[in-house]
Image (cartoon, rainbow, N blue to C red; front, side, top):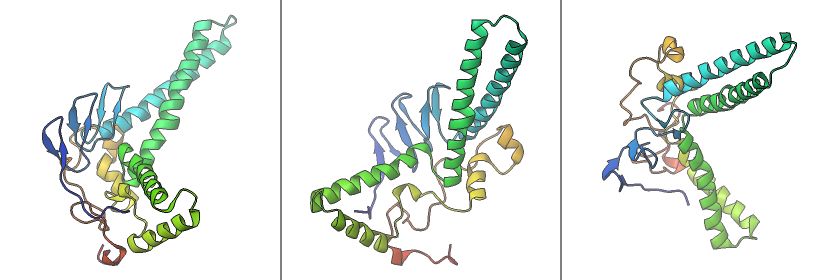
Length: 225
């Protein structure tokens, strides 16, 4: 069932009330504003303070790996006797390039344009599992038709909004600038302080002020948004 009420989120580890989008990192043993994920590559959390830096790091690291890989391939092709270490370096550079620029970088670009962090994107699938589990307990695991009818009723009453959509507000351009800044120079050279304060964010108007879901009939009109 869609959640209709929320309360303050308390961190028992840090003994504080957690602001919206803040999560506790068990690796760093502290709460992180606008927590995205803990990155083993950089040895720290990615959050509000360094998200733009992390995105730019992935881009330039991927290009650097691609550049090295091309140089090694050209050098190896011109060398009569192939060195095993050079082949190994090419393979490693290729894998790093594949992971950073081909996989990790586009994923985070998609998340930025979707208005979600990595951990928030996981909430959608978790919500689906909770709904399916609750319906299976109430209606039985084999009552597929009944479950579909209930889900359709929920979508009619609540509009099919996911819990991860709370911070999706504005156009893709606005969502991009919210994370990366207004100046395009900062997109390739992230210097200065990120936008906002890491605590207050524009919320999806289809949610209440405390994050509670609003029934579809209570949604503001397009003109009001």
